[in-house]
Length: 76
Image (cartoon, rainbow, N blue to C red; front, side, top):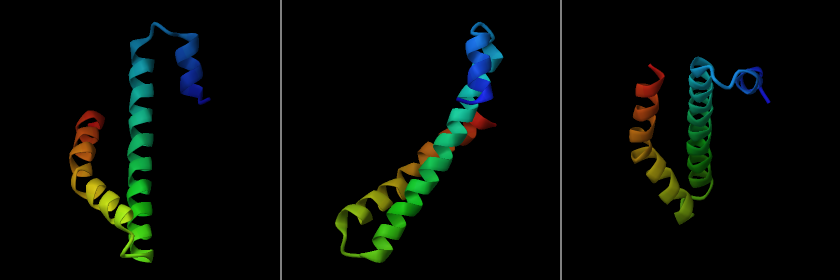
C-alpha cells in the first residue's frame, strides 16, 4: 500500500486525496498499457506468424490511441 492510499484510509472524506489517488492509478494504468503494447510487439517480432500476438498488437496500437487520449485529457 502506498502512502497516498494510507492517507485516503485515514481521511476518507478528503476529496483531493481521492482525486490524487485516481490520478496515480491512471498513470500506473498508462504505464502498464505501454508495457503490454511492447510485449505484444515483441511477441509478434519473435514469431510473425503468431496471429494472436499480431491481432493484440494491432488492437492496442489502433484502438489504444483513444484510450491514451482519454488518459491524457484526464491527467492534464
